[in-house]
Length: 122
Image 1 (cartoon, rainbow, N blue to C red):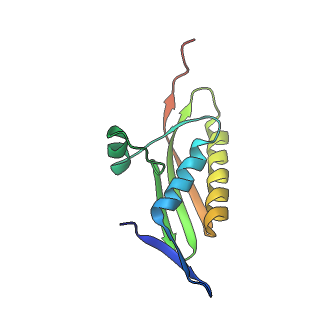
Image 2: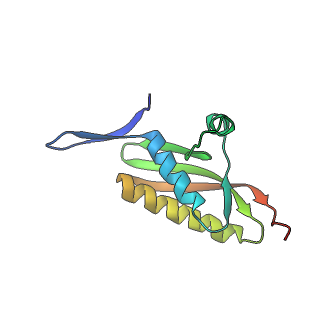
Image 3: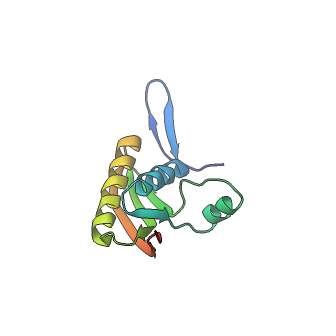
């Protein structure tokens, strides 16, 4: 069962967002940045991938405190791309997506470049 990260109360009811939703938003956003070859998973995400499932939260960790989020994103960068520029774009895109979709204030997006993907031999 997913752990609910935070809830907001209105006159109609409560809205809760599971931490898995936030990691999925961050993972999808990061993987859409030009120059990102893949997300780097750990633990459960790798097992899901080996079993044929798809994990959008692969390579993402989130820490929520009240209405603030800090994220760690691990990626592989394509050969030939500027690591500082790609990393900055990942930080920007992940921060904007998580903030706009969840209402959380994103305080940090830490990017760990775990590897470089070699160019295709064409």
